[in-house]
Length: 197
Length: 196
Image (cartoon, rainbow over all chains, first blue to last red; front, side, top):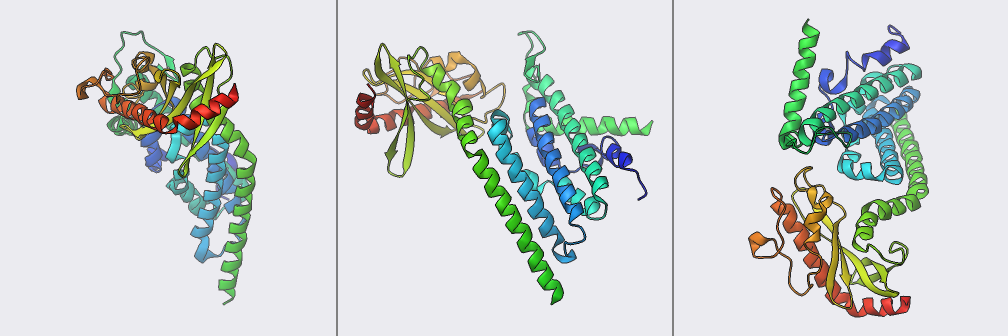
């Protein structure tokens, strides 16, 4: 192995942070980041699926026949997504209501399948675990950051706490769909500027 | 040939295993999910509508079948009499269905309160139907005989500014509940009499 386990973990936090660097998994990124809580919740659910599916795919990488590997990955991913969905319904019901359809849609999140195909299928278990965890946490942070920007500007709150007085007129545009694109675009732009220096 | 058998075997084992796991998780979380739904979706609205009830409306509930659908009816006791019920219906708002719980006094056929249960309306605009008590307070004390309408459509309800579609949906859902209540009233009264 060229890289150590720590390196595999750390790369997901900045160098390959999914929505900004890889520009993958944009559907939930744009859709659920109306608030910090939604963003972090979605990130946590995705992280769980990523870690579990990466471990299982890596364990089974020598057993799964090459021709049906994508089908096998999808079965593994879909199973964990459904587990997450039921768990969220049972324990964090309010969050489940807010995220709604985007939880089952983790199945088709290309980050998860991407990591299974590009990484876990070729690397040992511990490396895959680190990779899944790193990418997952990176994704969570990215969603949280975008959620924070949109929630503060669009609703005047952070994690449900009011930041400004009642005279603050929320910039409602930010919590609607166009705000997601503008917010994401500005964050991508900032990341690229920082990288240039 | 060999490869094909291997593919079939691997896929079969994998799907069987995943099916088994999901069945186990589903079974394990079933009760918890039902409880959560009652507590978070309907609970707060029911408690707000039937404020001051002497019993717990969440435990004193019964179901009535109308055709194929089953409706849960929550009962509130006031002054020792089970004379108020809460019933839920939905209408389409701006971001999807808006669920509305309506409390009705059976003796007077009057709305005692309205509360939004499920909605995916825009935060800061339509979502205020749920968070702003002054909007739903307008429904209180109205008779169920007339359909509810926003003032733009010739009704009495003042729509939330910037959220006419959501306001209309709440009115429509309340009207739906009223219609449903009228239809089910004989059965409801029978059940209520049994509770006393």
